Amino acid sequence: MKAVSAVILLVLLAFTVVSCDLVRNTEAPARGYVPDAETAKRIAEAVWVPIYGTEEIDSQKPFQVQFVKGIWIVQGVLHNENTNYIVVGGTAHVEIAQKDGRILKVSHGE
Image (tube, rainbow, N blue to C red; front, side, top):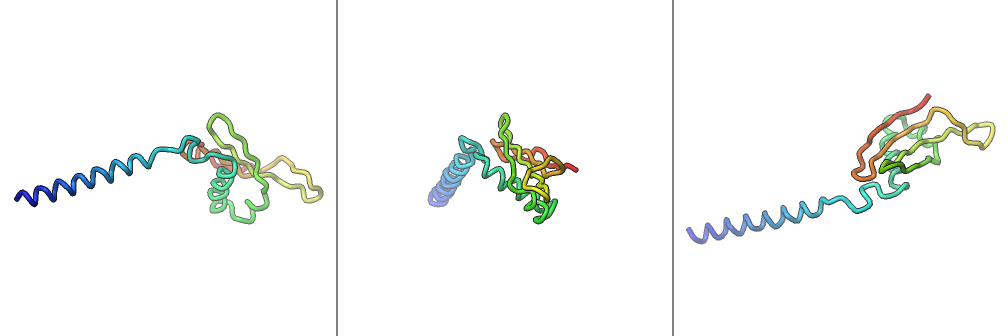
């Protein structure tokens, strides 16, 4: 009986140690899960492609990125086929929380 109790106690102790380690490893990085513009662009592309298609999103590169109050704002650009100037118009838009990577808004202008 004492041996069974000791084994159960050791198993419970092992689970406690493992679960404490899992909790410790789930803390967010100091700069958040989306620490820079490059990461924000990759997330934006992963969100947009299933919705709008690869060809449409590739045509809007290079993406423009802004960081405002803890939110990454990523937008595509339109290219005028007659010139190399970037023009304003309907492009993909996404807003991503730096802290936890939540997608706050997805849209596409017309």
